[in-house]
Length: 291
Image (cartoon, rainbow, N blue to C red; front, side, top):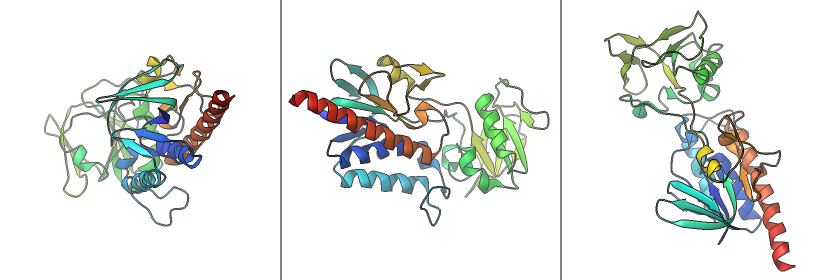
């Protein structure tokens, strides 16, 4: 029986694990290597960084901290979760029982199969306008998407970029984009670029020269796992209170899966709150067992 199982190996999950481990409890982090933070080429708006570092490096440092404190990692996909007095988390290959669950699944950005998209991630292809708009000031960029999320990303880019183009990849727009924002609905054939993104090629052989492409196709989250536990959701985001507690005692959530500002600093802070709340819950359970 584990004290805490943390589903998600991004900044929120790792932060929660650090607090739980330092309090003397066990923590097992379950997650595949798909945190959106890993795709960030440079991070320089995070407290304490004298020089920009990659998201991958920051994640590696957090992971090493957890390992140093005795935390365990399971790099598998979570396929199920249930409660019968304790919590059972099912992965592809095993079931892990625990007293506490922390959902820190993040909000993985939906991807589309466009040739060279994955190769150019962090080299012109981005998943966060708030994070990376600064690096494209005065440059032409495009946003891939057709809904509210794409509009939001475009609005974040407009003050920085020279021009923002919306690419719907064959889909009809679901929102009204500003009239001064060019919308191209032609399906995308591929992206081109050697060391960085240079152009988008469309099915009709036309091209668009851009320095950056921001993928904003909507978000996936931990709502499926939350539904299995009967947790409350709002717009597919897990509802928590100020202590990151859900409606089910012993289950906490933090990071992008609860919505809000999708930033590393926010995820780390919420992970810390979830970890502290989990510690309080575990101590109370321990007292009941001893009494």
